Length: 277
Length: 280
Image 1 (cartoon, rainbow over the protein chains, first blue to last red):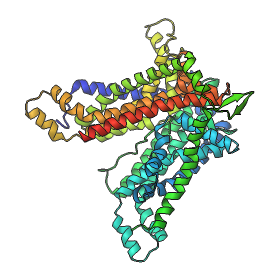
Image 2: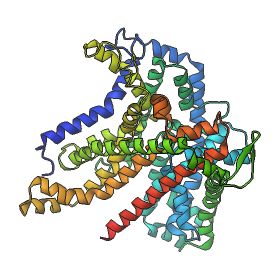
Image 3: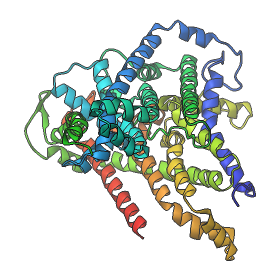
């Protein structure tokens, strides 16, 4: 049964689902080259004008830079707390551990709007002015969930005997952590970092509530969409798509090089996405 | 082998951070829902008045009900698309892993980009309408395509089908193939094998996928704003306007809490269902 293709109906159905998943993206990309604007069939006067316009668009590139800063901050913050949290969940027992686990994962499960609002209230109560910093704190906190799940999976696969040996041979905990634990978790940590970076670059629901004066890229696109649509947005969307694809390929390369084969390679699964970190 | 110091060192910093930035934040949402606004100021005056408003003004319940219906439709459609796809990939495809990656890739495409793509397709001078006119199926643009609950459902289904697919595929992959083979060896037709063996064993995946699709689409507020129009307004849009122009944070908090409660109830329900199945 396995491996056979004696299911013509099912096969056609699967093909249709793939069409449904990819057609909008293909149209989006195609129309980024359309001289006639965002709609209109058939597309005509293929042009690179929209990309040229995009290239000269300072506001967009400023927001890209903002997004990169926010995402980098979010990666550092979520790993800073996510790695120890994963170790703690595996090795320590403390009161409220069950609650802690649920709480950490909550931003991944809840609609982004709830996490966004709650953080807004917290920052306002703390008298913090809304800015890129508040967005970065929000992303970093919400994405601890991703760091924990990715790194925890790595911790489970790790051979504890190695750490034990290191400690027995007189290394301190800190040395053991740096020389044994971290190198073993490297792959999970890199994977988590890539995933967190990409999710943060794309995040909009939480940012929506925490934004100050400076926009992140999705918020900049959002504010333009409200003013009217131009194929320039198709162009930036196409670039985002290419960027996302490259990060998957990059992840693959790292993974296959480390593991020496494609057999076990699995692409990261963004647990939750977009509007909902 | 891990000393107390080690355990404290790894547990305390994340515990503190998460308690401050998540627990306290969610708690503030809860507290706000009992406060109220007077003369443009939030006053810490405890009452259930926000919840009373919620229960008595039909607007809120109507929108909540509509959001539930939209999310329900998205869930059903995502399953209807995701399940056969997962089944095909797991049982029939020769290039399973490649196709699997192909399902995942759209997840990496910006959420906003995908919603925007639908807007360019469904608009009155969008791709679909001009195509219909180009092939002379219609003379005038079909305006019902965009700014309708239909557009919201379509867009959200596109966004959340991969989410429904993932756990279903995982569940199907875990079904021992010898079970399927013995079923057919013992004379069951492919149809019987599917309904009596494969389907029941994949149910936990279906439930996980359905939960994802439902919860995520229930709380969505960007797709409705982008493609929904006034008839596609969902509960999160009400919350957004209460936090924005209307400046009634306490009422907004109460509405979000109602949504949160619905979500938590659902999560609890599916978790207990899964537990029950894994014991059976």
